[in-house]
Image (cartoon, rainbow, N blue to C red; front, side):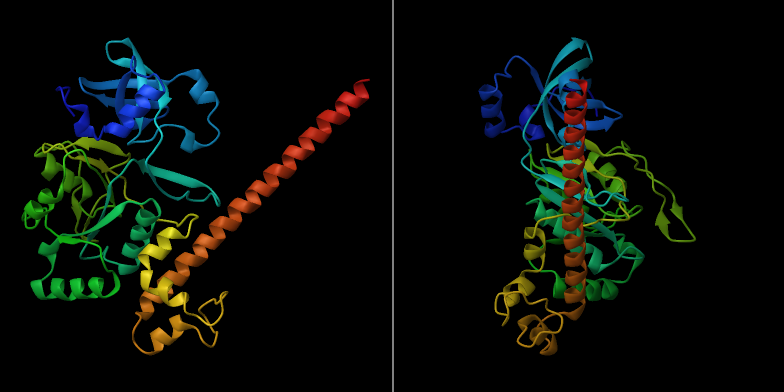
Length: 360
């Protein structure tokens, strides 16, 4: 990212953010968007360039969870104390936040990015291809009220007939989601993808390592701003290079967020994501004989009937049930964690009260 002057509207600043600035009397601060975070240091992009920022003590010490701290995509208000250094005094409310289950920490969420308009779900057509994983990514997008777009990359590695069969399979299970096919190597499909990028809109790349996300950004930027790995002959995929999230302003004034490859994409709480991804199953479930139908063994289950009659894809059903179990487990983990925290809080209060009583 160069320190050229830009219009803040190119970064997605709109009337709602402007109104918030006035309502909170932030007009005398510099407004910018977090493009990179690293160990409580934040690079913020403004109309005049990049500024290295940190939080004021009050924001840092009152943060209860990680989500209370800035993430890539956030809008912040800061003041300069040096030519290229600033102190963040306010974090703007998020329109949305893209999140997944924190790996190894049940009941915890990991924020991927904030204030995203479109989730670009990238899969290579060779080893990475999985419709189940596509549905998983689409679910976390829907949960955050983000429009998903599927990008099938590396199409130069398969024949046109193989690609047609693959597209038929995806469209047979996933509806109302745009699909773009492209090759960073040959350039096929890149122009179609570029035509989708709108000025002032934010796009977040999602997918596993080595599917061509960073190479795609370099193609959009017309320069090698993002390091990419060589292709491993043994596994026919790129080596993982991106280690952090970073926001880039594209030449056509769109905004794109590069994201490290994610091997695990755990579903968090909230039913809306599953309902939107599996709309057919949700609609069928409303017609089941029993309101608490589990869609597993019950007679009068419209979901099971649809599978038997060939009206519902069985693989999609099994993936839905798996994601639903994950969601229930996450929600119960959160409940159990809060229960323990509440019990611990009561114990501390009793201990303090007893100490105070013994003192007198």
